[in-house]
Each structure stands twice: as C-alpha cells, then as structure tokens.
Length: 342
Image (cartoon, rainbow, N blue to C red; front, top):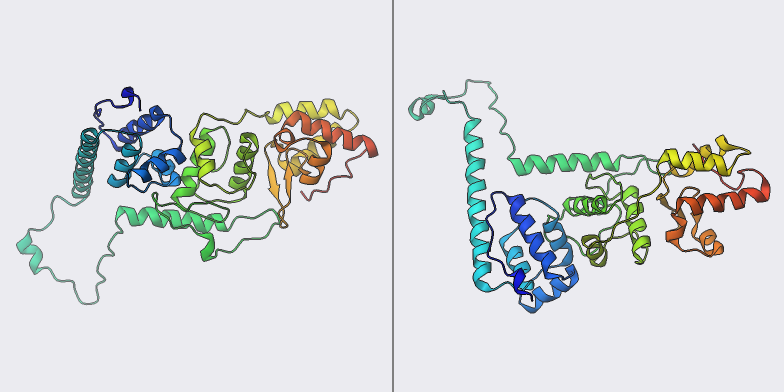
C-alpha cells in the first residue's frame, strides 16, 4: 500500500468530518468495496460491501468495529488505527455530552427542589404526563410513518399496495442485507437512493424501494454493463461508489421540440402519447407482472428492443427512442401501436 495513504489521523470536529476522512482513506486505497471486504476478512474482520457503502454514505458516527475493519483492510498501521479509534471515542463522548446538554436545556429552570418534588403527588383522577419518546425512537417512528405512506402509493395498475411484513426492511445502517430489492424500506435503501442521486439519477430519497428506485437501479445497471436485475447487490454498490455516472438526459422542453419535429403530421399526439407512456422521462423503465420490461420514452419492450438490434442502454437514448417510434408510426400513420390509459 502507498505510504501516502498512511497519513497521521487529522482532527475531526464532527461525525460528518470523521466519515469524510474515512472516505478519503478508502478512496486513496484504490480498492473496491468487494476488495476491501476480502482484505478485511483476511485481517480477521467482518466488513460486507453493503455495510461499508452505507457507512461511508452517511454522516453519523460509525461503529468502532466497522472503522477498525475498514482501516485494517486499507493497510493502516496499528498505531494509526489506535489514534483513529481514540478520535472516534472522543467524538462519541463529546456528542453524548452535547445531547445531554440539549436535554437539560429543555427542562424548566424553575422546577421544584428535590425536597419539594418529593412531596408532590398527583391529584385523584389526574392523568400523569405522557413521557416523550427518546430521539432514536422518534426517528424510527417517523421512518415507520414514511413506510406506511410509501406503501399506500398508487402503483402502475392504479391499485393500493397493502403493507406486508416481507416488504419492510428493518436493518440498521450496518449489517444491511446482501441484496436490496423492491418492497424493502429502511436506512439501507436510503443509502442506495443517495448513491443513485449522486451518480446522476433522480429518485425520491425516502428509504422506500418502490418502482421508481427499481427503475433507476435498472438504468444504472444498463449503463454500467451490469446484469439488469433491478436489485442492488454488492457489485452494484461497488459501481455506485466508483467514478461512473449516468449521462445527463434530455429536458422535457428538448424532448417536446424533438417530438414535434419528428412527427410534423401529429406533433401534439406524439407529445401526448410519450407523456402518457413515460411522463417524458427517457430513463423510465417499467416492469410488468410477468417480469417483462419496457424502456424509455415510448416504452419499447425487451422483445422490441431485441428486434431493433440494440441494447438496453441504447433503448434509453431519447433520440434513438423517438426515431424508433417514428419507424413504427410510419407503418400505420398513427399511434395505434401504443395503448396508454391516462
């Protein structure tokens, strides 16, 4: 390992700065998440790629054992690992003191003395105040509420999807499942969505692995030459953590103008059909109940894409998709090939 990676431990004033320093150590190691997992295992530590990706994608103080595993995988000398751990413990203690200080500040400064408080008794029939849930509990209550709201989202078929236990991911930010898939919910999915956004794909960052997240995962896989599964495994996280980004796509205004030029016979109809099919989103991927997929502005199926002799990446290209739609339209002179319920 290059000696440049073995810098003395810089000072970190916040948990976010500490994680940023860890990201820099990982970057300078030149190792993928999978390679780091193997290196950690060889050193006697457990560090799944998904755990590492989640840790480095957030700004909260990571667990000590995860920090040690990452540093060991990067070849950091034991003395420097000790300093990293000492810095983490100091931060943890400081954050704990701040939390207690904030809690004390919320209490009434004019409260009764212990002696007076001891004599206070609730009156008959009075209801004792309801204790407030601690911060972690309140946070998870909010996440649970978001999960319920995400479940009650109208799907492509227009039906409400009921919540089932198998659809909820209760994993913590460390120890994520090896594979994330549609229906899961939680911090691990939130981290996946943050990575997708960072790599150029718009998706709601709400912790819910719904159809939108599945679509964006497929787009990233198509552009990255990965198997287009719609699920997120350690290989996908490795690619997301790298330098690969998805090319910027066309704006709605540019798409509308191109459609009108391509279909001068029925410009409004062309825009209407494309909007109904894909919302004028060139990176829209829909998955049918039978597992079939439809791609891009005019939602060409896997079979149609194959017949055109192009790959999925090309199918997501706005210019190609519109050109292919014109070719289909030219056979009949209308948009009867497509059916879309607005």
